[in-house]
Image 1 (cartoon, rainbow, N blue to C red):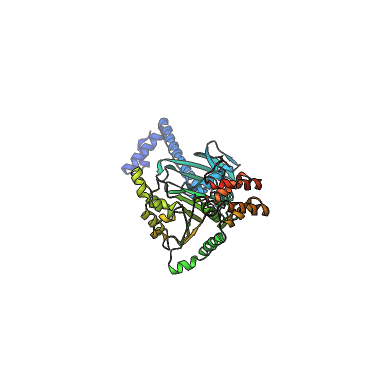
Image 2 (image 1 turned 45 degrees about the vertical axis):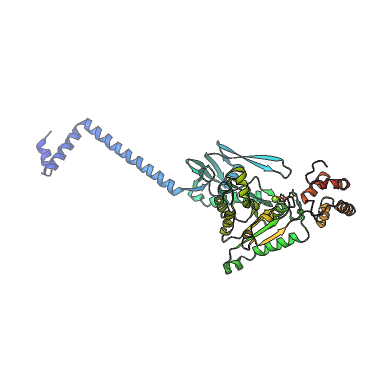
Length: 440
Ligand SMILES: Nc1ncnc2c1ncn2[C@@H]1O[C@H](COP(=O)(O)OP(=O)(O)OP(=O)(O)O)[C@@H](O)[C@H]1O
Ligand SMILES: [Mg+2]
């Protein structure tokens, strides 16, 4: 190697000299040359890999969209239900959801629906592929009802993002269609309201026979209340109205409220105040978080007034106290209307503080069967049998039966027993004398 030449080619500085010597070594030594090439290749590949990864993340960010539906949201169940019925999907993880329906006759039918379980599922919706990931958070538990928090994540291409609202809308419509013409009954579950069984077919108002004019009177009042929201707001009065239906057992109080809800297209939230695990706090929370378009039905409100007896007998029992009930009733104040129906068999036990307007604005006695009701009910069960109806009423009166001793539930029992035979019903009128008779 001609060192003097290479020295003369350098710019004369020390660094220039070093680099030129280094270049020479590289050029002339095949091992060094190969190593340098490999190094360059390695660096190049690493840069390329990083670029691809960043590019992929960029593309994912730019081209894919996610939609997260947490289990707290209403649309969560709608979506799972929708997906259970959706055909274009591949799921290898399924969960079962069992719904019980208790029919009026006491029979229970079960319905299983196979909803997508935790894991990944692929669906094709309107030509677009969507990845559905149902995840369960192992650590976080919803303290109000003890179930783990869950989310469903939908992922699709950015250009198909507008399909999300379509899909959710479809799921909602499907859920609402299942409820169409039906009344959803909510019961309390921890701090939450949960639908109780499947939505029930609406009970027709005509099927509840109350004494002359009572149904119309209540219906008119409720409708008038519902149409006067602005009137209440303008005057700063809380937009709520409390109704009390009192009377003997089996006179149709609960049935009427259910039929009324059906007629108004409302759902019902039922709370039984005699439940021993219902505390003041829970009552307050539940009453302030009622699902929209629902009537709140508080059954057996007298239960809040006889706590003292219970404590003597059973020691300490949790339960709603009188002041808890009053506070909860006063606290219910939302922009939405709030209709509260209360029922009791013992109006005499109620404290006057509960009966003041603002808490109970309308009260009505729903009594045992009057002659008017007996006639109506007979003709509902045995259409056009006017003569037999006369005969039935006469015998009924002759035996000394009247509104003070026969409930409409008993009458219904007699007519159901003799479904197609009005004559046999007439023969058996005597059995109504004993309210708890089982042997007709
Ligand atoms: N007035 C009525 N018209 C039609 N059916 C009635 C009537 N009263 C009672 N029934 C029938 O009797 C049964 C019990 O009625 P419901 O539960 O409405 O009574 P209730 O007044 O709420 O009784 P309780 O005070 O014990 O809660 C139901 O099956 C219902 O169909
Ligand atoms: Mg009842």
